[in-house]
Structures are given as C-alpha cells and as structure tokens.
Image 1 (tube, rainbow, N blue to C red):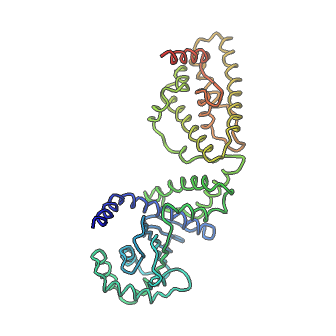
Image 2: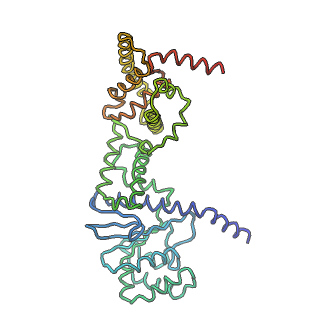
Image 3: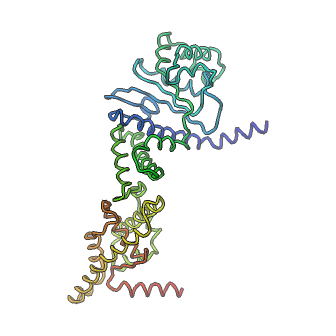
Length: 405
C-alpha cells in the first residue's frame, strides 16, 4: 500500500509537467506531420485546435483530423477499454459523417498484438470489422465511470454510422514522446540542410515553428501550408551556407527597457552617457549590444563561427571607426568647436549609418554592426573605440577611480 500511495503522489506532483509536455508534443508532432506532407502536398493546410488537435485541410475542407495522446510513463498498452480511446471517439462521434475524412489517433502507447485494434493500424492488415466488434464488446462490458457516457453514445449510434466511423479511423501507436521528437524531425528534414548541422537546424526550425504555433492557437494565423514550411526550411538551409550566417530566433524577440539594468555599469554605457545620449537612443543602443552579444554566443556555441573570423571583423570595424574618429576630431579642432558631446554623437551616428564592414559576404544586419561597435567600446575583442573626443582620458580616469575604491 505505501508504494501505491507514493506512486499516486508522484503522479499528482508531475501532472502539470505531463500536461505541458502533451501540448509540446502536439505542436511538435504537427510540424512532423506537415513536414512529411510538404513536398508532395505543398498546398496542404494545417490548423491547430480547430475540429481536433491537428487538422489538415485541402481547398478549404478538412481531409484529416489527428488526436494526439502523450504519456510520460508507460501506463500499459492501448486497449478497447482505454479512456484515451473513448475520449477520442467521443469527439469524433460529434462530427458530420464523411467518407473521405480520415480520423487518426497518434499515441505514445502501444497496441497489444492480441488486440483486434491492431487492425486499425495503417497498412494491408486492416480489418475494421474485427476492431468494431472489440469496441462494441468493450462498450457493453466495461464498468469505467469515466467512459460511461461515451460508451453509451457509441452504442446509441445506428449500425451504419458505427461502421462508417470505425472505417475512417487509423491508430498510430508507439509514437515518439515529446523528448524524442527531434529524432523524427531530423529524419524528416535531413535532406534539406548540410551534414553535421542537425542541432542548429532544429533550433532555428523549432524557433520559427514555436511562433507559428502561438499564432495558430491564438487565431492570429488561420492556417500554415506545406509551401510555407518549404520556404522556411529553404531559408534556414540557405543561412547555413558558408557566405552567410543564421539569425538566432532569440535575437528577434521583443525586449523591454528592463534589460538596461544588466548593463548600466558597463563602460560602453558610460561612453554613451559622456556624449549625453538621450534615454530613448541609449536604450536602443543597449538593445543593439544585447542582440549582438546573443547572436555571437549562438554562432560560437553551434560552431558556425571561429574566434579568428570574429577577430578579423573586429579589426575591420576598428579601422572604420579610427578613420571617422580622427577625421571628426581634426575637423572639430579646426573649427574651434567645444561641444564635445555633440561631436561624439555625430561620430556615433556616422558609424551606425556608414559602416561597410561585413562579417560574411551575405550577412548584412545593421543592428549587428551597431552592437559590435558598442562591444568594442566596452573593450571586448582586443580593441577599444569611443565617441567622446576625449574618451581615452575619461576612461583612464574612470578606471583609476574604480581601482582606488
């Protein structure tokens, strides 16, 4: 008895996690299903949580409905008595009759080889009459209170309706759990990207798909098509070529000004304060630095970029800055200007606008260059740049003050 109580307690404590994994499984399995169809059915439309968990349409009409059932631990085989099965049948019994609408149950549980339900698997061994008899027997003899209403509903159907319903059902048992779906995604899309890039390709694809899933569930987006997926996969594969680099989906997230607190004491922020940069521009400069740092970390983590290549890029940026800085400071002295903060802003603006250095030939993201200039202003990558005409003496004073405290 103590073991049973402990098991129940453990199940309860993980119920929220299990439910969350179920939602992840549903969304990621939808990607697998769309990936399998995309090349042969580019016009196929996918919906989430419409008529069912996953819905495929053709020319605006549903052609296939999928129920996904995810379990984090064994739980035994799927049988004609299972709550999962009757809960699914309850949904499907409410649908209008259609001979062409496929009803598919995708479950992480497996069917017993002795069960007549194996005749509902896809393939040549299908015999829906055997499966129907087993369902009828379970509907009449089961004592489950949970499934009672659903079983009665099934028995109340006329014979023709029951036959038509079961004829349309396919059971895909033994589906991969949420933790292993990456394996299926690799098998589905391996043809599309360079060898050895599994991890980064999946990161980029799932980052895009997570955003699409949210839009589908919120109805901001009604459907996504196989062609949409083909376009995205092609774009990601293109970003993994040697003359460009992919953008981490995390970089494209919206950030609020709270991230400023992470960097308020950094030298590059102090450099911006020395030229009296107004709050709005200061915040955007910090955002550029944050995005650039996040992006560099992503490339290095996935071995898409070598440190030596980044060093060469930093050298080119420093060379651009040096030419502009020396020219602007010389002009300031000739003209007898004393508005050093304004001159500093002019130098910053020109670098942001006129920088021509490129990390890769086809990677041309202005925010990245802007963020990299702030990284150099912070003293990173072995170079130092600045905006205020007297930034070097100001830095020396600041550093000496820090060391003396």
